[in-house]
Length: 108
Image (cartoon, rainbow, N blue to C red):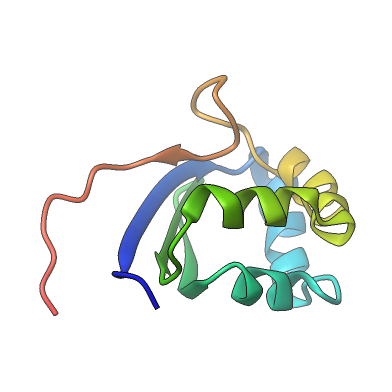
């Protein structure tokens, strides 16, 4: 296991309907999605909502983040999942549905 890397990202929901759909999808993720997340060495994955904003946090425990993210992106079930949930979001930038945040403080 590699050194733990922490990631925080922000996005927003696409209105009240997007919020309801996003919440419903995450209450019952597609079969195989959670398993792929774990197979790609992501742990302690959480998503929070406040006032239309989404905040995600996860820890990466592998040795090759780029390769694990490519593995996840190539997975057909994950692609189906993203096709369902991304329209529920209204990205803050054109770079993708999530914007990475800078970690300013951490305490174990």
